[in-house]
Structure formats: C-alpha cells, structure tokens
Image (cartoon, rainbow, N blue to C red; front, top):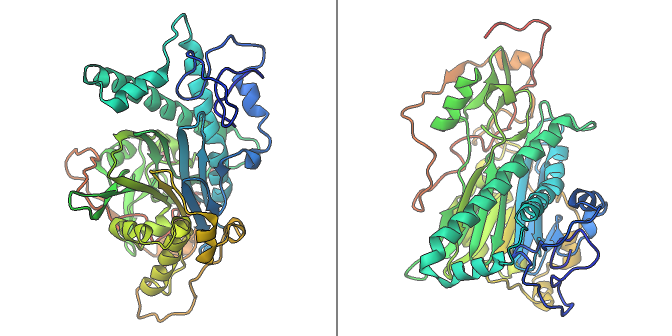
Length: 473
C-alpha cells in the first residue's frame, strides 16, 4: 500500500521508491494530516477487494523481506489456522504479524475472516484518531518516536505513555469491532465457532502486542554470555487462570475439567455440559459470551534491544509438543532464515508422531519475524531446496503424522471436535479450584508449558443443545 494510507489521490507522504519528501504534518504511522474529502477511510477500506494483491502482505506459505511463514494441516480435518505478515503496514517502518487458530464447525472461516479484517480495523482506528488530532498542530508523531528511541530522558516517559495509550486503545477498539462484525455477519455462523488471535505491531524498537486465546508469541534473544534464550511475550489465556475463572463464574459460566483430561479446564454453559471451550477469550463463540468468555485482548508494549533477534508467533499445535526453548533453538539453527518456519512446523510434526502416535496431530501455523530486517538471498534459499514456489504452494500443507500406533503409547481419547452426548455423559467432571486472586503476570524467567492446558486436545467438546425452556441459573 506504499508508505501511507490516504483518503485522497494526492499525498505528501513518501511511498517506497517515489523520492518525494515527507511532509512535516505526516504522522509517523503513515497517516497524513490533510483536509478530509468526501471519500472516507471506511470507503477506502471497502475498496480493498483484492487483499491478496496488496504489496508486502503475505498470508500463505512463503517469505517476505524480513519474515517467513508456514502452516500445515493436522489430522482433524480442514486446516483451521491462519496467519499473516504485512510489512509497510501504514508506513515503511511498521510491520503487522498475526496467527489465528479457529475452532468449532466454522472455525477456519472465522480465523480467515479475522486475519483479513482485523488489520484493516487497526488502520481505520489510527486514521480516525489522527483525524481527531489534526487541529493546528504540525508536530510529527514520528519525531516523538525518534526521541524515544534516542533516549531523550526528560520526555521519554511522557512519549512512551502516549504511545502506549494510543496502541492500547487501537487494539482494544479493533478487537471489539472485530467481534461485533462477527456477531452480525450474515453468512458466517459464529455461535459455536471462534478463533484465537496473537497479533503484534513492530515499529522500530517498539513492539505492541494484543492477544486472546492460547496462541503464543515468544522472543529469541541473546543473554550476557551471547547464548540464545527464549522470552515468552504472551500468556496462554486459559479458563483456570484466577482472573479468567473468577470472571466466568461471576457471569454464571462454569469451569471444570473432564475426568479423562484433568489437565484441561474448560468453559461450560450454566444449563448444559457444552460446549467445553478450552480458552477464556476468543473471537466468536457467542453461545458463551453472556457467560464470561470475552474478546477483550491483553495488551503489552515492549522496547526491543539489539540483543533481540527474532519473534515467533505460533498456534498451539506447535506449543503442544515443543517448549519455548526448543522453538528458539530450532529457529536460530535453521540453515536459512527463509526455511525457519517450515523447519519448525516439520519439527512439531515429528514430535507429534513420536510423543502421541495414536492422537491426531493439530494444525500448526508459524510466523518468524527477524528483527534486523535481513533475509537470505534467493540463491541461498534455493540451495537448501526450499524454493519460493514450493513455499507459496499448498497453503494447508501435508500432515506427517500416521494413524498407526500402539495403544500402549501416550494416547488422547478425544480426536474429534464434537463428542456425542452419550460419550460425554460417561465421563465425570473435575472442578477446578482457584486459589488466591493473582493476576496473570509475565516474567522473563517463567516457562509456560504448552501442555499446561488446552493444547493436545480439541478446543470444543460438544455443541450445546438449547431447549425452549432453560433452567434458571
């Protein structure tokens, strides 16, 4: 989309390669201060009929200037994972990345809808914000960012707070608008279908993150001894986290685990043992939105340093079988950067086969963003046998797991998204005890295992059966 998003055909913002000077009234996020014409930004967004053709936006297996992405279908049906990298997002120094893991009968459609629409909602909010701030000021927001990066100590705190507040509001309102659109969508049934989301925006040394569900982002960085370490950037928002469980119970929802999977707390309706959602926040899933499941994202802002090497976003099909440290090791040791995402997915597929040979592998989706902005040359890429054409083909990938296996090996009984009511009734429930009132807090030395919750099993157990009369809760 060039260097800026504009509502007019004439722009004083620079776009890649046009040689024009950047106007001093141009916001650092690529949105220009100008008089509004009759064509609104919403109209501009609505004209984006061909999102796949937008430059520097990739959403199928492949690579960009500073990233690679790869997804592979599991053995549970259609691939319900989606992913995106959008470089030059609003301006040349912004990059948007996201991974979305759908669940339920229409989860694949929800994930793809969120992948396409959520970035546009961020764009729309930021344009609206800048329109309100136009006034008579000619200060450039980009200059404030440069001061922040340069370490202007007297103004650092104020500038960082403003930046933090702006992006926090952008993520909150965009996620809210996205869920509202899904609720009113005429052709997409999201009543018992939904999606996770882990989304980041990188601008220079600033990293902004918004996320719901249990997809995860980690940072590969070097410690003082120059060794690679893994830093988890997000929290897996599962129903047994104290704050999540308290909210759900306050809204009359129920949280408990089934006897055959005591490590997987789920959210249930107050009047039916359904649907058994294994996360506390998600887009869609409107059957549970009155009972404590929300789409409000957790937001965080991190300042990157020169020690930070890359960011990995992935769905729980990866975190189920690989630790944060293993993922960092695989990505950092990949023969080429362009092959890192594919090699990581292949590694996860092998671990599924080894650890859970009789269970059906989950879908996997990976985004690897390299923070120095460098990528392998095409010749180096092809020498490793990973041609661009190969990666751009087969969006769903081919699962590597075999259905063969011995029952004596680790075995997960639930291999399908929906379990019959007769089967479900044969298992007892295990209440989840919540101790204390702790908030989900991230610390760099914490190791959040993907096996501590929803991963390895399906996100939904059973679709609800609503009768005309519901028991009073």
